[in-house]
Length: 262
Image (cartoon, rainbow, N blue to C red):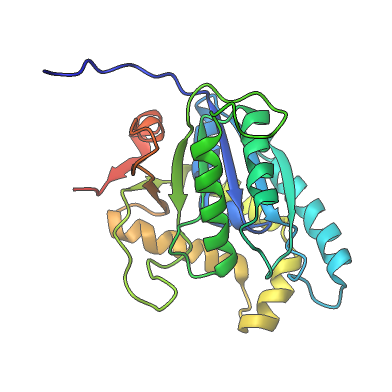
């Protein structure tokens, strides 16, 4: 007995939900630009306002500055930008935040969702990944207590990576499912990163890093070297139980894809 396969149409809306302003720009802006060029609507959201990420400012002032930076960066892709009210450095997985993410997925009618890795180095990133995974999984269920209409099918979920393939303890993580060659859109990524000027001084203070944007791009160069291109971003598709297995992003970006999954 062979089950007939069913063709599923996913809404061409890509929602990138990350912990902080500048995360989407650092980890997957190139891929978002390529998807926009393929006809996708792009939406960027952050779980927090990045309110600890400032120098010589209060948390409230920092959040205001970073909100404006994030809006300007998102506008490069004609993207909507949302922040969901979590506190930078004190992000917890709560019912309130899960419901907010479900509401956003439904509001924008997301077909594809990007977020951090569950094994990311940063605790806010890991918390975000957990919230987004759960919210995406139940976003099509009409019993969820939010006002927005359920999406017609569970969105496809993808995880992006920071600049190393290491877990919080420094161990090698599972290899990426695929790499995306973002060389052709690297100028767009640079422009989006460039709006996050507040992070330049922060990285000098926290990590003695003189060139934060250059550090991010060097990470993309390192990924590119792994697969023979100049700049790359890396991804894993969440294909465990509860999620669809269609390779929508891989198919739509086939000419930019380097598939490393065995």
